[in-house]
Length: 233
Image (cartoon, rainbow, N blue to C red):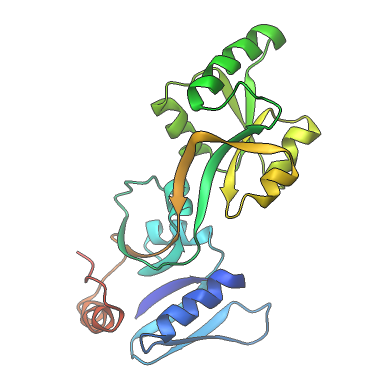
């Protein structure tokens, strides 16, 4: 049976259900809101697995699910943007968000990543430690800053409200996901003019390491026709 991993709650789950539903595949949650069980109607040989969006990259890479819907930011962070374990089948047109680099609005001389690099060097000379950037996306941010030649910084982990870390004094800048930018402005933060790290959206992924039996491949060929996606290679 082909196992499809779908986010277990919120707008991303409903948008995913709607996307599949518009193509003849009805997905629904079964049981109560605390049960992560689901069902698929419209094709035989396909099962639904409800997971957190952050778990889906791991399950794809382990081969425990054949297909999965999650943000490109999460796959990039957990597996890398060029991960061999997964294949992008289709961008789904929802779940848009940008991973950006932002600094305090009062830093009027820091407009670009190059400016941040210079400010970081000055910060270390003045304070004796590296400029701190709070983020949940260590791999993506580190790769971006390395490509830009920025070295005098340290990433600090933020699993809560990242935008509040500057005000709380636990970081000097942040790298976080934003859709409208309203929360950034409310916390007196400004996105650098060239501070876009990654533009994310929901993507249908296939696992290259899952056990694709001949029966699974036959089901996938029918499913690919319904969804308008390529058969995984």
